[in-house]
Image (cartoon, rainbow, N blue to C red; front, top):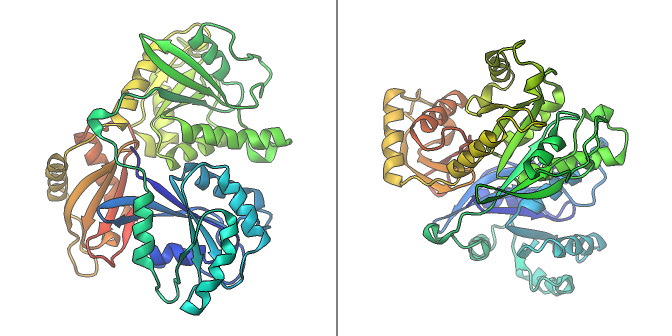
Length: 445
């Protein structure tokens, strides 16, 4: 089970970024009276009552961006909402109920996630009576807070923890059906591959690029195991997107990646890697999804190009994904397809593995001993202990004296060491560095 995600949403200028910083106890998000300052999602790890959750800051819903990035901001907000386990719906008690608050409330009603209504800027009790105006939103009495006056922070955190999903009983969880997203740019053979999987013309297959305009789920069985294949639209670079169908196709492909347990990133053996391929892989990396590079149409090049050449090519183009396996297939004939699916199943199992705290700490101690981190501000960086707090992706928290002391290079070293010594050899690992003191920083790598 992944670390639960808690998204902060609301119209512009209600204090979402202030709330984000206040709960995190450090200044991470830019706070300004100007509307539209927050555009991208920002996340941080929060620990409360021995529970961890990721807090997500978002832009203002309904804002028209001055730099014509409205669609991008809106998509970032939608992504946060769709992936959230819990939503903090923030309102401004001083301005009263605004029409845009009602529109946000209607949007969240369709999500089907728990929502905590948070009335910010309740700087003193004289403002509390204004909270009754917000009862019409249908989310019950709001939690009254003030980030400025530090009012009711423990109460809000207590309510958040109470609304988080219950921890799974690892022994009682049945093996779920694996969802595979099949992504890649246009005309690399994704739909043909799906047809081969299901032994039928389930998808429309054509040599005309861009035939698949929506993400389509196809269920199939192999060796008694049920799979769900998600075929996605072929993509091209954003400057070439001429229609709304292509624009929304990109976002559907991204949503399919977020839904998937394993991503199959398709390449045409006869084509070079493009900017679109790299953009897609950036999204896969951002979402910490297990991935297999799939070089399709290999039958057209057998004897002309050695597999080692493509392997080196992929490793050079995607250096941060040196752990991702590579498969060479012919989707039309089914050559190596079963082996590919079996490997995907292995990655799925790796992403769901758990390691005991004792084993993990012995490995971390060895890594620190073999490569001692450099001093930071005349202090030796220390890791007090490490623990795995979630799966899918495997998420490890290192409790330390100073998260900033662990440089990007050192974090890469630790990730490589963990991958070599834990059962996560071919899947991404989320690594967080968390200050041991209550008011210290938390950081991720």
